[in-house]
Image (cartoon, rainbow over the protein chains, first blue to last red):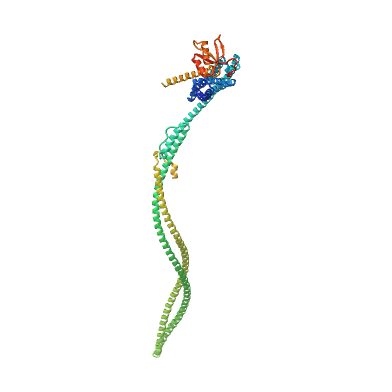
Length: 513
Length: 106
């Protein structure tokens, strides 16, 4: 700190030497000019020689004690030379002010010793003048009391200047101490900041290296060297982040691989789906055409069934009418049967008559036989009658047989008619049933027709849907190809990273993937 | 070597300034100006006669003459007078002459 104070004082005194030396040079120049003009070459020469050293010191920017003492000696002598130059004028007393002024100028050197030397030189000059040339000091005549008075004034001024210089030195010292303290504090803060900056640089260098490696794809390496203080958390966080990023990239890699595999499978499946969709579309088109054909067939069948229903109804009506006719026939047959019965009765009556006639013929023959020859004619008639009776009986029997046969036939016919009636009734019922069934079939055909129409419409829709599915399958295939390409690109991007192979992939990402 | 040369230069400078100081003291206090009165002090084995002979030869105006003490005060008319006084072994010292006001040129 003393060195700093000295440096500061040295700077101030160097500036003071420059200023005071420059003023001395100026005064010397004035004295040279004045002395040459006023016929005082020795004073001019003396002034020139006297200011040579101070000017040189000022030019050399010196501030050492020798330079200051030289200036302290020079200035009172310059004042004395001015006083000597003024001795031929009326400004001797006024020129004494220069001593005080020059003594004050010497205070610019900030050295109390300079003031002391200047005061001593001034005092010596005045004392010498008092004895050698008192007229220079006291034009009206010198005396020791006036010298003492002047000396007291000079000493007061010198004391004040010395005190000021010392206070100035103390002030500069305190200022330097404060500045030194501030500089020490600044240095301490600077050192602290430097330390922090060094730590920050080290941390930033490590982070930069690690981030550079991370940018280059290195996910596996870690920052092993601990960071100082609070930066350790950043290192830990970066390592954890890198580890998580490593796991994330691993999971992404696995996901990308699965996506690629899935995309590959999806592409194949899409291709299969597209081809199958095309096949199914073709099949559906075929089915649609078949359904259309079937619809037209079913519509034709429905028409046919309607015609069949009409036919069945007409057949039913015909059967009804036939049943009525059959019933009429049955009634006729019944009447025929009744007539046959009556014929049979009549035939039986005829047969009875023929039997009676035969008996009568027999009796007549017997009687004619008994009547002998008389009775022969009768016997012939009786024979004829008997033959007739027999023939009638035979005829009656034949008729009876025929009637019986007829009756049987009628009975059979009635039975058949009854059967026919029953059959017709059954047939009518069947026709009715058929008509009903045809109705139901017709209704069913209508429903089937509607169903087939719906199926046809559905098949059309299905055809369109299948075509759309085929298109979508094509799009899906193209998308799967793009997805596969993207997955491969992603795998290529992920391949840039250098991973810790031992690091497990993050399960959540696997789920997410 | 450089330090030694610097010290010598410094000493030469101090010596030069010392000479300048002495010359200045002389010029400021004892060297008479033209027209001023000067106490003519004989140097060495010179005596009052030497001063009087010089004053006679230079036609110097004597302002004070005290034969008892050998005190001679003469007015310096020119620098040549001062040079001739020095050449004659007489040291002129500026003084204030009686009957003359300070700074006044008689």
